[in-house]
Image 1 (spheres, one colour):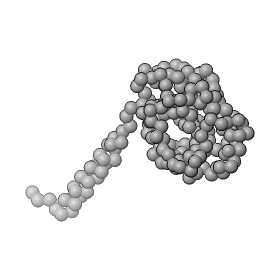
Image 2 (cartoon, rainbow, N blue to C red; image 1 turned 60 degrees about the horizontal axis):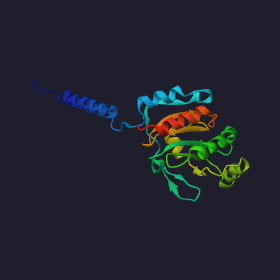
Image 3 (cartoon, one colour; image 1 turned 135 degrees about the vertical axis):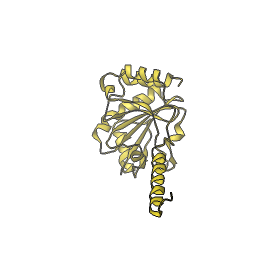
Image 4 (spheres, one colour; image 1 turned 180 degrees about the vertical axis):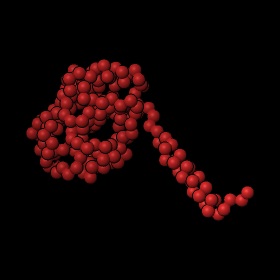
Length: 202
């Protein structure tokens, strides 16, 4: 029995729609790596005080590939920091909570910074370089970078909707946890969490 031309067209369109749906939902860019379940459990157990706001992801998430501008005028991407555990903080000069927590991030960099760990601060949105430098000078910060994300490309790609926002990145360059709003990053809980991530051999 021959199919009519209209039925053939409808059948072909249906087949195309099914194939398109399969491609749309196929995990072609699945993110792998991150931290082990054991490390994830350890981090969860160390969350007290402000660190209770830290959301530990059930699996690794990709970080932004968009470049940001460094204080020297060059550009860099987060991929350049693979091999280290990274605390990535998004801030702005107009953000009062950012001013409150920045000295705590500076303390982390002083105590834990090195070949295994780094605090990266990126001012996102319109931030005058002179105002950024003044912001750091007024609160005595000299060991954190004045990176900028003027068009918010990095923040937008990472889904940052409010400031401050802090992202924890594993050695393999994947996001493993996130905290929205300011927090006591100099607390024993925060330092224990970061030390656990640094010590992990995932």
